[in-house]
Length: 285
Image (tube, rainbow, N blue to C red):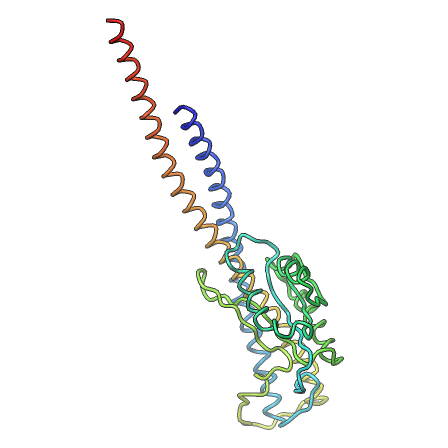
């Protein structure tokens, strides 16, 4: 019985150490989430302004021919997939990977991937996908320069007709407890050609509307990728914070149960010892 109490005590000590780790990770994720949400609030207005500018150019000048607005038969696709560099984030990584696999499982040989995050890089490389770009160690605190590099690589492949569409897969942050995996077509962007505002005034573009779009569309793509990186960063930290909170609570429940078992075992051992003493005393009479 004494051995049993030692075993229980050892388990309680091990779980307590794990609880300290998960609690610390929960607090770290909470701080990172707060910073990521601040970035998100600053990013959304920039993206909306660029999108409105593109729509204004198109609505003011009529139909404009531009390489990034040209629709063609889709023979090969490029997916930009945003995962995390680390684990212990609940279903964050598996959910976005599952979304992408469901979309490309029937055309694996006709899809190129730009993968962001070590988890996605390892997963897709190990399964023989054609990964043409890898970006790691940027997911927790993404910078706009990272989005520029990713966007430039995607635009080069599209403009050179290496692919006929570019799709961005990321996790949208809704609340700390709720995130939504999304896949949006980045190129050619359908939304840019839709919902055009009615022309209310004559606007002259210098040197031309086409050259204005040459500047605006890359900015739109870069800001969209950056926005997705920030959304995913928020989602990752929210998912990790939730997972670590749940792990901490589970550890507390296990400690309570083991403490109860320990007290019962200790009580049984004491009762057994008392019984042996009483029996020995009775034998000496």
